[in-house]
Image (cartoon, rainbow, N blue to C red; front, top):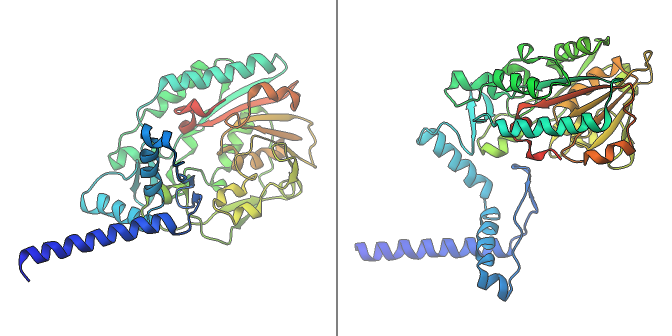
Length: 365
């Protein structure tokens, strides 16, 4: 076969491949969300004269075809392996792997974001708190804090972030916990810390707030593999791991009320544990407003915990020191509504946030 025929054959085969892929994008069943990336996929844009003439249809259709391309997850993995293995890129989609631990590149430090977070906390203090409240702040360093330097990746100055937040939130007593943490306290494939490894962190917080905890726990293991959020975001074939969780009588008999969905639940939501993100087993994930009632409380003290998703797994470890803990996530509820549900008088108040949220505080309402 001469070169012209070979080239023609290649062009025809490539054209057929594109045509098949195009038809598959149009007619194969479509998923609304990506389980691996944990996000909504683009919907088919409306085909109207206005969207066509304005160019919105074509730009929307391009995004739609990228999200619904056949074997998309397999192609993403192939691209990720090529980028990191063949072309020696240090990360893929902003995620890198160091000694088996995946982490997101978080750089640089965004002081304007810290100012915004401090401003939201100040608003809550001015609106709801007074001299009857003991108020505390603590920052949870991202896993990148313990991986970036040795792996040669860019990293912000986490000590500076802590210092700045302590200064900017001057109404709160700062509780440092970073010295208690290391990379093994976090999941290898996920953002979050491991509950079974942070009992010392809970004890540090409790001591600073003047309460005593019961540290007698039974450790259980969730009977399914856990693939954290970085598995899908990086598209790399990361090995699964396990979720361990701690139980005692207080946790087992605790009553949890979810104001967002008007329902009563338990500390560990085993239905969520079998869902798309097993970490959501801890207090059913990032709900806007929930309370935990300790049936064995002696002190009558209450805690209001302003938190992100890291708070879901540490709050159960603080429960034995309080009669009630109220968890508030102002990423999902307007602060102005809180007075309808919470009596702040005489409560301890803890602002406990990860550096990831503080450095990207646009999510806070």
